[in-house]
Amino acid sequence: MSDASFVLYSTPWCGYCHRLKSQLQREGIEFTEVDIEQDPDSALIVEQANGGNQTVPTLVFADGTALTNPSVAQVKAQLGA
Image (cartoon, rainbow, N blue to C red; front, side):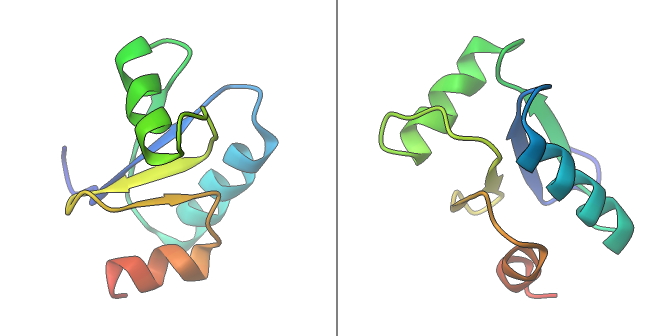
């Protein structure tokens, strides 16, 4: 997983996902993106983080913690940036 410290689970049609991705890129925060529609196993990870719901964007960090539809400030706080 290169320099990314979290995985961003998303779908192509999710407006919140597109907005968060562009904000993270603007801030220079690296992440790995996974489309849950293309990877059924990742959809299960998202469900586990969200009480059975496939809610995106869901971010799962290296330590196993997760955030659902966070702000960039929440992501930075989680990363300790």
